[in-house]
Image (tube, rainbow, N blue to C red):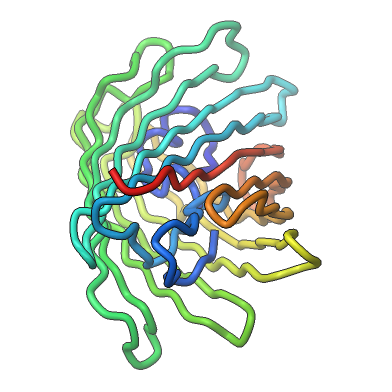
Length: 260
């Protein structure tokens, strides 16, 4: 997930974020939900465990830098239900040490696989707990509820994912806005051999209140590399189109561990 600061990163779930991938037939195939902000409507097979981890280096307009190291654990509970656990390490802009960010728990429910227009469709409600430090900026100090609507379609060899999200937060709105939304349009496809690509336009509409922020629209692009069908690597760049989005470089990996 991309952000204007570490608090917004941890508070918005799409957090680790995420790539356009169709629901696979082989349960051992990795299904990357990152590196983009968007996630796909696919779910991990029942009883299978998948891990995603990575890192992102942000450069802000004042030349300060921030680092986020997200971690996601996904476990298939049922044929259409996935448990997702999200956490991260954070070095806030201008900081010198890493701290633990906030922790989130979500359930992705794949409602249908072939709806008109929506295609494969899923809901991802989640709860974020205030486990990170509010004083340092690694956490928001708020208990949040999030809901993500996910639509995935295949356009020939190209995968298309569209997400809409809404967050409601505790607190008085002085540290982080009480309400926030996001949208994403993500594309992914094959390249040459084991190398593929992903591209995305995403936005955080402006928020109100004492901690309100102007709207952000950004572009992400980068290659992916499948070392095996069950382990996929990625790297890429993020750049602002509008608003105070930092420039960033990211890298990461997705590992489908197997049936547990």
